[in-house]
Image (cartoon, rainbow, N blue to C red; front, top):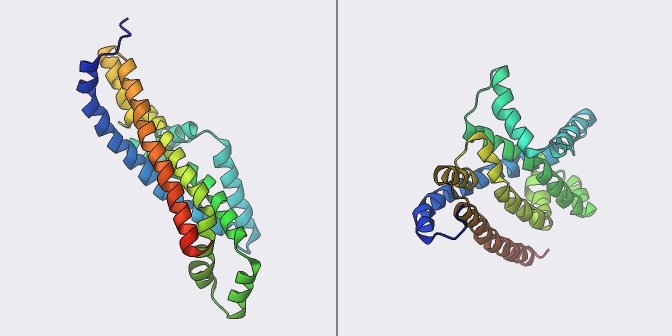
Length: 222
């Protein structure tokens, strides 16, 4: 087997891999958006006065966090149709990513909410703010800055977990690299390029997130 780097082959497959990168970024972005919203919902539901609901939500979160992401992807795509829920690979993958990371982000949100001084909650009660206004106008804006570091870490994590979507045929980077390797019997170039693409995206993204975290803390005086 030829293990020498083939530059001609590299330039030939690069456009295809770059195109797949767009799908990978889209998958990470959509999945992360779902996780942000659902994670906040999970965090708020754990703070309700209705204890049975709080207990149920906590058990759901623990179940999600305690099972592998790949298993959840398979369950949504392969098992759900057996109970009448048929979803495309793309929709199944986005739901699985969003659901899985929402469980982790809910804990990040919970930490941010717990970091809000008790006096803020008491002041909201003293002026008779509704629960909605208390969270939207007072608590959540103060809870987000301490949570930004964890939120940023999970954005990078979800991007690096997108190769798992190749297991159900989504044409992201790893799936495309596997296809190229199988078609040409050369895996050195596609896998190396995929690794470099993940590195090139992840490192600047991590730096950007650190900058944004510092800016937000300074801007909001946190």
